Image 1 (cartoon, rainbow, N blue to C red):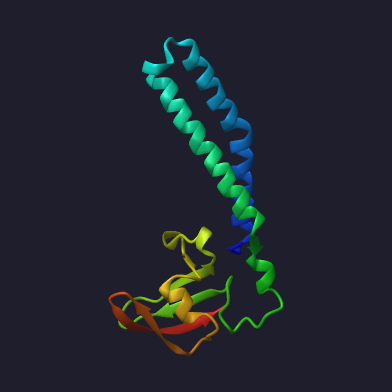
Image 2: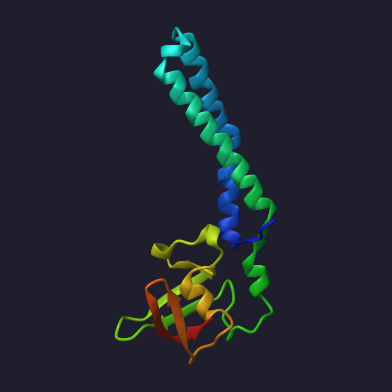
Length: 156
């Protein structure tokens, strides 16, 4: 089973989503199915088909979240007690590439990655490249189009 790295906040959000799907969303879809079944012949009922598709999606997402949470490893607990100058999952990092502006982000697991909100995956090219390095180092990042260097400015 693959370990999924999550922040405490990410873990909590997934738990809330799972609870919502199991309670409110399941009930909502069941009501839609019931109403559609009362609407006439099921073979030609588009609302019934849409409700069945939504039910399948909801049940699939519930299974996915169950698996994610069962294999979750909360990374903030892992980061405590470690050297904060060495980049690990959970580190907040500021880097600079060439003449571009410096960028700051947090290294998170792939499930929680969202570059637009400043969270990059430990499995991304930059994430892989800078793990286990520290401020002041220049690191080579390998991407499909080639390689480039980033300077690690700050780790916290």
